[in-house]
Structure formats: C-alpha cells, structure tokens
Image 1 (tube, helix red, strand yellow):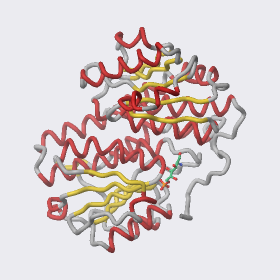
Image 2 (cartoon, protein in one colour; image 1 turned 90 degrees about the vertical axis):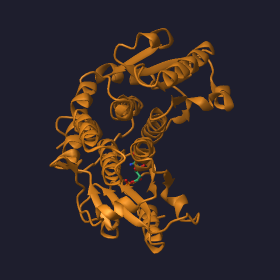
Image 3 (cartoon, protein in one colour; image 1 turned 180 degrees about the vertical axis):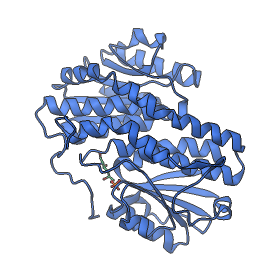
Image 4 (spheres, protein in one colour; image 1 turned 180 degrees about the horizontal axis):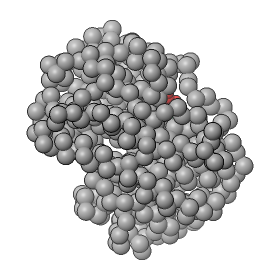
Length: 368
Ligand code: M6R
C-alpha cells in the first residue's frame, strides 16, 4: 500500500503530479473556469470586494502563496489569516466578503469555527477541501475539492500543492467574473497550470541528490529558510516540514527581514536554505536575493540554494545547488516546495524518526 516506499509520505510526495492533474481536471470547459459545487452565482462573485483565506498550518501556507496570484489577477485585496486568530479578532466581514476556508481534512476545529463566524457575519464561504462530505464543506456556501486522494502521512505534501492549484482556480474564477482578465488570458493561465504536473515530475526525477544532502544535514542544530515574494511562504512551509518531522529548530523568513534581526543568527556552518526566484521573472527580486545570500555566505553560513535550472549567477553563492525547472513566477512554489519536502523527510529518516507519524501530532486537529 506504500507503493514500494518506506513511508507513506514518500509515496505521497511522488503522487504530486497526479494530485495536481486530478485537481485541475474538468475545471475549464468551453473557455470558462468552472468550480465544483458552485452555489455562488457569477453575480455573487462579481460582487466580492474583499477576500479572506482562513486556514491552519500547511493549508495556511497555501493561502499565503495564493494571495500573490489572486491580488494580481483580480485586483481584490486578499488577507490570509490563521483560522485560530481570525475568529477572535472581530474581522470586518459582510455579504460582499468571500472567505476561502482551506482544509485538507475538512474537520479542523479552528477552521470550522472561522467558517461559522464568517457566515454569522453574512460573508460568503467557499471551502477548499480534500475530503468529501466533511464538516467544513457541509457548512460552506460553495466547495471546491482538491483531488489529491487520501493523505496518510501526518505531514501534508500532495494536498499542499493541490490546495495551491485549487485556490488559483478560485482566483481565476473571480478574475473571469470581474472581467479583470480576458477569457483568453484566463485560458492561458489555466494551460500554464496544466503544465505543472510535468514540471513537478521533473523535480521528482532529481531528488536523489536532495536525499543525500538531507543525510548530510542530519546533525545540524537548526536550519533557516529564506525567500521573497511567493518564495517566502515556501520558506515557511520548508521550515514547518522540518520542525514537525525532524524535531529540529527551523525558521522561515522573508529575506528582506534579514537585516532587521535574523541575520544575527547566522554563524559558521549554519545551514540556510534559500528559495531563489527566477532570473527571468522579476529581476529586482532575484538581485536582492543574490545580495542576501552573499551576506549570509560571508558570515560563514552553509548555503543551500533552490534555483531555476541554468541560473548561473547563483552558483558562486551556493554551497549546495538544487535546480528546479523554469516555470512562471506565480507557479514556482509548486516546484520549489518539493525539494524541501524531500529534505525534511530525509533528515527525519536519518535521525531515526517515524516520518509518517511525528510525535505529538495528529493528522486532523479537531480540538481548538
Ligand atoms: O486538515 P487541515 O488542512 O485543516 O489541517 C491543517 C493543519 O493541521 C495541517 O495543514 C498541518 O499543518 C499539516 N499536516 C502539517 O504538515
């Protein structure tokens, strides 16, 4: 049942191309994005004037990634909130607010309570969920299912990628309804998403070196992760995976924050994972990150750089280089997260821990 793998998590990492393809399938018909149980009309979507994404843990990170795309495509303000904070904060909600509740299990207590709170305030709630008929979709106005299949490993992997794809579909549906993108542009974005299963499969074909790298990090005391733009939530997710699986101190930072404190943590041979943007995308982001890496390298850190294939400029700053295929900027998290999942799993394995069942954690958190 583990498909020849030692752990479910490794099998689930390998299933990511399929999870993505299955999540996208059937959502672009006759030149239009369609969502699943669309109990929201086009007019409802047109009326939306603000979007909240509420979720916990890895699902929250998928929302952080999607914020960049939804704001860019729709020009709507998007706030991403931890479900456990959202409901105690008296958020400003009304019937023109769309709340996207993201949950693999559909049973997470904090996310469910956030949904209930949003609906009491008359906001419209769309659930992104991997489990048919779970409580969160049952209590929402509309549902978009991720079709990642059952995820047994406690650490979310394939559902993270599927969540990003699903929230991107919500973003495109909003852009289509609001007319902020022409139909052919929406079609092109969808096509680019459909190329991602192949791109992720290419990343998977090169993970042996990442596993080796993971083994070499097994004795590290701590690992830092840095990124900018969509690479920032990827850094947070890489750090979360390492904490929960390898019980190692790990932290993700926005690279621009380095100078505002975290750079003081850098010391000789501290491993720092840097998620590079594409050199062909936003040149300014790429240049800024290069300068961040050179600063931490100069202070003796061991730099582990996730960069686009053929990005030669980064080589001098990378003690270890992990290459991922070139994809459009907003889709980079779908490729750059994969080596970080493998890294965490391999470090945990090398330390002798049960990768599928990390201590103190449950797959679904049904208490607040
Ligand atoms: O089932 P949910 O997506 O609502 O779960 C939310 C978090 O508990 C979950 O994403 C958790 O952070 C991951 N399993 C960590 O890998």
